[in-house]
Image 1 (tube, one colour):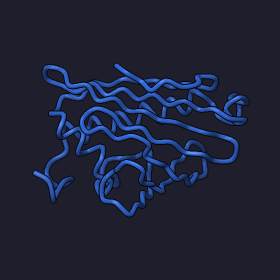
Image 2 (tube, one colour):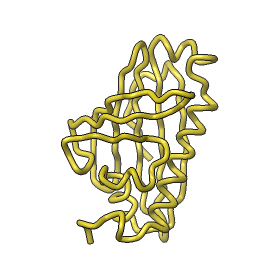
Image 3 (cartoon, one colour):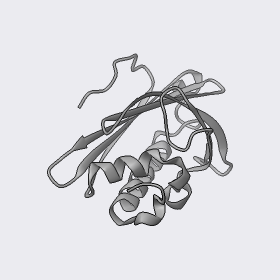
Length: 161
């Protein structure tokens, strides 16, 4: 597994899940933004000029780590098909960088999520950015991806084979 090198001075959340589906199905489920509303319970209200995640493009969305939703703009920094996606976001004293690594196994795909939070809010991580809550969102996102990739049918991907 290879993660980009950088400063690791903030909070880091890393989770791994095995998905029993072909890597093409997992990748398409993850990158096709038009289908996120059907399976993604963590990142909502997705808006983009692109149908799929693409290098250098932005995705506006919201997530709800607490009671009220937070609107963010994710910038896709790196996209290597069937291998890696990295996006980042900045919001009021917080910088988040999220990497997803896709590793093809014999009968599954290992997806590793690694998110690094830096900035003023990450230093006050207790009440303002509780690690346990952020980790729970990451786990839920990966479980949603797993369920959609393993159980989701063609209805998620009307334009793909």
